[in-house]
Amino acid sequence: MKGLAFKTAVIVLCFSAGISLLAGRALSHGDLTLPPLPEPEDYGDVLMNRVSAEKDAFPVIFSHSVHRAKYTCRVCHGELDFAMKSNETGVVCGNGEVKNRHCTACHNGTISFAPKDEEGRNCSRCHGTKTEQARKIFYALKKSLPSLKWGSEIDWGKALAGGLITPKTSLSDGYQPIILDQTLSLEAEMSGIPAAIFPHKAHVQWLDCSNCHPDIFNIKKKTTKHFSMARILNGEFCGVCHLRVAFPMDECKKCHPTMRKQG
Image 1 (cartoon, helix red, strand yellow):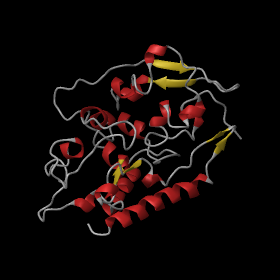
Image 2: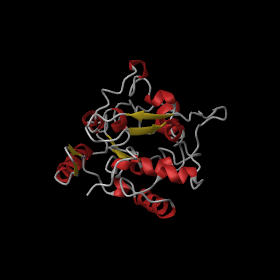
Image 3: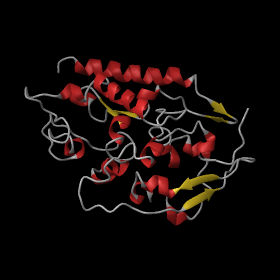
Image 4: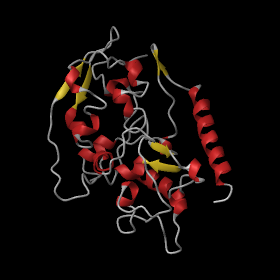
């Protein structure tokens, strides 16, 4: 691992510099400036670097696109206790010795590749640059699934509804899926903007109620006044997912269906 601390610093600096360069290409919708989007194959990727640098190791690049075709969000963000926001989970690899927690619940050599291979190491499969195998998996999915204009350019909702993907909803056999078909109408705070529609049905196909309530949305407050677009674009509320993993907010009509076409 000699010299990895310096290389890790270079990776993190390059990653940050790339974001800064993209910031100049951010799209503006009216008075709102939408954050820049990475390339489709990188949309949904999370740089896990909570303790990597101090452990003299490369960060982990986690691809949501590669994983979400196999598992719903609630598996990792419920059963495996991953926080909804990146780098808020205390994942410790221990050189591949951690068993049945976090990543190793599946990366155990049976469900998926283990932290250690026959030679005693498998670190490069997670730590370092994005692997060619992950890119191949993404492009194969993109080619076979319904397209979307923004983000990963994959319409995961249509893919799920059409049975083109059948992600597991649990790692155990006793889980009963949530059935909730309530649609909320959320009045917009900006003049002339129609209400946003929130369909619970589309969300509970991927998530548990506890993923959003009460930490992201406090349903006890009984108000939507604080759900401003400025706060959402700051990574709060809907922005927790719809800036990083779920379709981004560049297509306004996805949430405001009665909005007239602009331009």
